[in-house]
Length: 232
Image 1: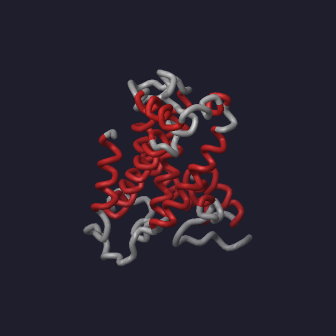
Image 2: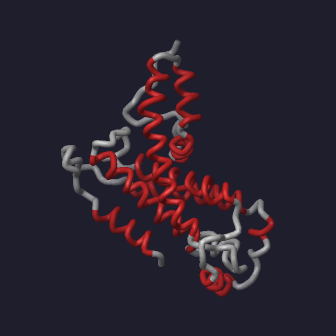
Image 3: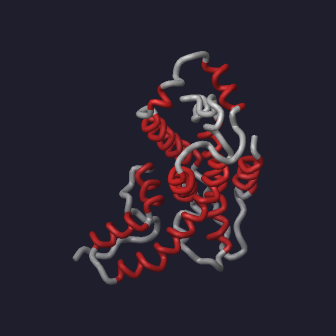
């Protein structure tokens, strides 16, 4: 197993029950059942979309475990044959969505907004990145992931380390960017606009957070601890 997901598990478990220096201790713990349920829903959606691809359906036949092991052996190099947009846009988006899944189920971080001087902010986002690394590795290499369902890696040159690295790191960058836009631009729009306008800009300018909200069956424009402006 690559080092990144191992380090991610250490980050997630090591931070349990601890508080950062700039915030009082919070007794509530991460809502693991919700994290797993929402991540499972995302996984199901992703596989449903993959089944529409011929290359996925082509490898559904054959001995499962033999083909799965052969697929894992196909992990090599950096390039996996996917378009640049898939590797460097789609996967960071997946990383940000799964990062927000963690954050929105962590009482210590769900209502924390952009503040580059806050240890509490950075702690919550690093833990979100760690969960993105765990999810990404599972999505790529687990029996219930791409290697097992559709046997990505069975054909040489179709599985590489790019997704394992870019998904959590790119997702972290995208989360920080969305947080910054939310705190500086969207809040300004909310102060001088209607409820509907606020909803629209919350969704358009924070796509990863919006999709993560949908996975917990809330409006895409939802914000924990922050109400919308009054209707106009």
